[in-house]
Length: 374
Ligand SMILES: *Cc1c(COP(=O)(O)O)cnc(C)c1O
Image 1 (tube, helix red, strand yellow):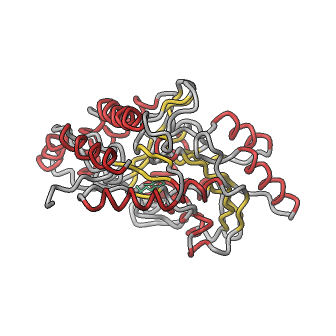
Image 2 (tube, rainbow, N blue to C red):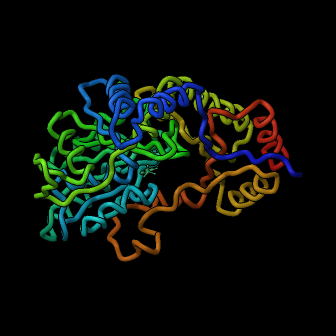
Image 3 (tube, protein in one colour):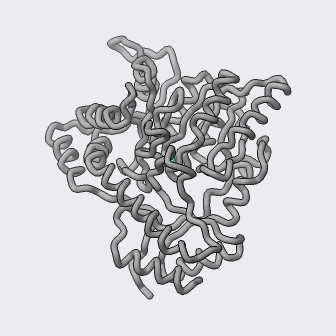
């Protein structure tokens, strides 16, 4: 009974992370700048391609905040946000004194529904207020309907802030997630596909935006020998130590994506004989998910809870799909547009252990729970 815990998604080091950290100690580069920060940014830029400019920051949340600031979001503005997401997508809207407007998902990618998005935009315009930005998320690593969402955004000339926190390495029509927004963000939190223990990045295709991001992230210091400020700044830069972990992690990113995709295959084969369960998967081959988390849909809430508890009993972590933002107590007064798709996903869905470091015996334990349950 006292079996070791199997986690949903735990950090997985490749081995070279410590080499980069030791180098930082040797050269006394412990500050939030230095060769690892520059090196990590270059690694990410090479990985994303498409002339992307990357600024390494202290978190994905910080990246979203600086993204909204640079899209001109100020107090009283309205910002559209996918309701089916993690709270960090929406919180920075409120940091800016702006107002979140939540939009439902569609059933194929579980991400922002282009039809509900257009309804929301039209209604807000009719009420006299055009939304200032759209936060779209590739949840669980699954790309959102990029063409359809960008078409709506472009039609109304509203910039997209692409939350790619869970989707590093995913692609849509062969192009990497993290390159579709006017501004995009990544996260390297402990549970993400690669980690720097904590960290994030802002991605743009403009050298100027990158420079402004670093300026804002390092207390907005004007160019002067004394401390001189004409803007409010933030302390959001990534440290050279964390970036060292990131450089080591970049060496094994594609390998980790392979392992996560294998976990998804593993679940697909287990559940192939269980008709009442569907494993979340790409709608067609234009979508390539890193399968950061594998997720299933069950018949109803009761079965979902029963299966979750069966896993919990043998020390295996699972988690219900993310609770939509418009159902969160903190956002209960916010507007919501949609048809309760996200609500039904939350009711019936479960995320299963998906880490790149799960062993054969971990998989056997997981499979046993599922077989016994059904
Ligand atoms: C993790 C996450 C974030 C926030 O990233 P942090 O680095 O933890 O601040 C934002 N959006 C989504 C969808 C996430 O999963």
